[in-house]
Amino acid sequence: MEERKIKLLETKENIESKIKKYQEKLKSINHELKTIEFKEKSKSADEIVELLEGKGINDVQQFIQLMKEGKVNINNN
Image (cartoon, rainbow, N blue to C red; front, side, top):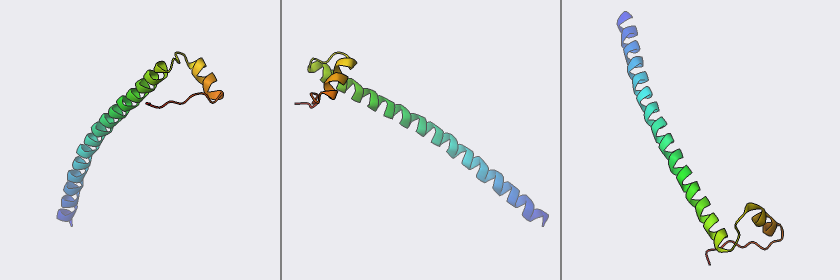
């Protein structure tokens, strides 16, 4: 019985060690994914600002007013 208990404890430690390593890798991957998503969102926001400026819309209030009036059409055309 004692040998079985020792073997189980060793197996448990080994598995917990592997889990910890994978958790660290997952944490790193998740951080990198969040960074990529943030960069993508920033790029999209920059593109929207450029499109708006290209249409002569330079401030948020002006944009909101035009949206309310149904006059905003943001296309790349």
